Image (cartoon, rainbow, N blue to C red; front, top):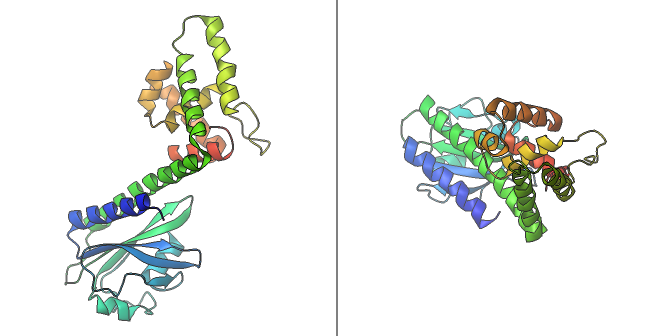
Length: 266
């Protein structure tokens, strides 16, 4: 894991602990060996938790990974709903009430965030809400970070081409000369390859859908895209609905990632 990713996870844990007042917040990364490695902490720990690797099918973390939903235990050691392979570690840290939430990226659990109390406090709904909100924010930021890392690995040329494509698409909407405007479209399409088959023989974005999704990739909101392309907000939303249906994407970020993977966007 890069330093940037580790720092972003730590910020989430710090935010959770500050907003909820829990004794400890921590995070575990899903590993290739079907484990959950506890590597990120906010708050005091006696040293029993750091470095522990939990099994997928054991304890609170294992169930969270498998079921991809938040879970709450009023008293970990006394709970009858989980296995207890890690009671020794939990007792060493004097943890009692514990809750967990998955961070799901590309439909797979990538991380598990935890909050825990060392006293008799219970984990209220507002704590779960904060935990889940931060998990969702972390999902978004880590997905963006992964895409940026992929861009960096591909070299600066790819990023420059993407910016050039976005600028050409925007420029074509404000030029009054129809002949010049029409000549810009094939140039933009050649840059992105978006009018070509995606490689699966089915998915193709129209020129305007590519315009919209290109601007989504630059971070613009639907209203900002509407303003740039001289469209109504409802029209942009309709384009996004069609794009997400074509790419089988559940979010704007997922649509961009899918389109790039398929070669529909730079």
